[in-house]
Length: 599
Image (cartoon, rainbow, N blue to C red; front, side, top):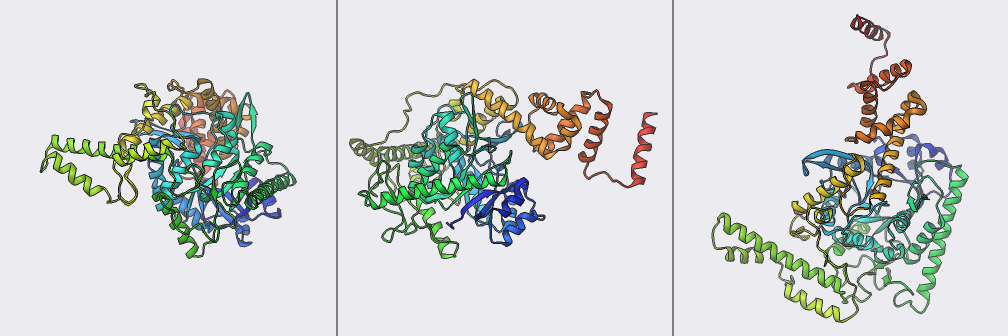
């Protein structure tokens, strides 16, 4: 991975300041806010100076139940090409729900919402990521998000979930340390544990941002200074690995340029502190083993380079990631960063060592595969077909199974062996999900994705998508449409999330249609929140602005005739297939028509 250095999020409001800032190696821009044919002049000048520009997508919804939209993928690829970017990033989140999978109206969140850390969600996410990787011209990195709410019945920690994702797809990770802090405050999750479980060699770069706490809830606002706890997490990360790049995010409430430069300086100090700790650990008594107090993280050395190939027992996703790294180095895209560390944090430092969790997973996968084969054979026997069901099962099993594949009996022996030594146990599955609840909707799939190599991209079982779709639609409907809260969720916290979504929706509509707050004055926000309570967003923010204005006009909510006339003119100007003509003759014809219609 090419070293990026220190960067800042490019926004139109601070474009001039970013151009003048010293020590800016790269910038990141929101992909959906850039038009490929009309790049902002500031970005063009930065590119001409050799500053790397990376598009950061927010609307794909890779964590959603639907497969990524081909049009959105094509638009993202077009922006990558226009900016000449070496990398493109998105989020591990869902942003919409409903539609054909649930036979319900499509709903838009207008915000990044967390996916449940379950096998169903992981299977769907992995397939969606592979689809995106195939459609994009450069490597993809995905970001961990901040969450106000927690899904019931989760089966993995954040670190385990990200490890599995990178392991199975070879996707890179964009680690937001501010989001780790947010999840620490809101969900009680340990940032150090998450870092210890991450595949550090998969990190593309790091986000740093500020927020604020209110009533015990941390809001990842990107509108406040970076707090010390976030810088401490960055130091912890830098003590484990040298990140290829670190970027400061700021989306609103922009301070003076000098304040942004001071924040960048604080980020550099945190990185230097972490680098010094890493160097001291490497030179100390643990130089040949785990860093004191941390799981083993064996970085690239002369004896063990990053892209040398998989170690014994390395899974297929890891091999794919290493192969990708070798391919990039061969094509001249950049060598691995000096001192970058790769981790086997959740698996132990010895290559041949296996934890009981891994062995249990293999046992579970083997049993699920056998059960799947048995079910297929039974179905074929019931609906006809040549040969007995036993013969077809035997043929199908031998066709699908590789010669070196483990049987459930071998995996069971491995479980027993691993349990006799040190082990890391997974969350207990003794409590079965209640019928009809969200826990049931996100339960483990009865049929899992085909293993890598079985097909070109690995086709995920449709039942998993449907279960995930139902769960996400129920949650989003409760947040934006006022339907009952799904069982297992914290009702108070869901209320906080619903109010946050409504507030952000009003703020973004005000940005994409700045004339509305001017026309409506101080009553804009109150009027929009009242509208939004009963009218969920079903498309983008521009459509939402038009629908809001049309609602006010149709319902006769505006008593002031001047305000009503201005809003009507604004709506007519934007609701048609093209802007209304400003030519005097056309305007006179429109005015004459209105007069005649009144008569």
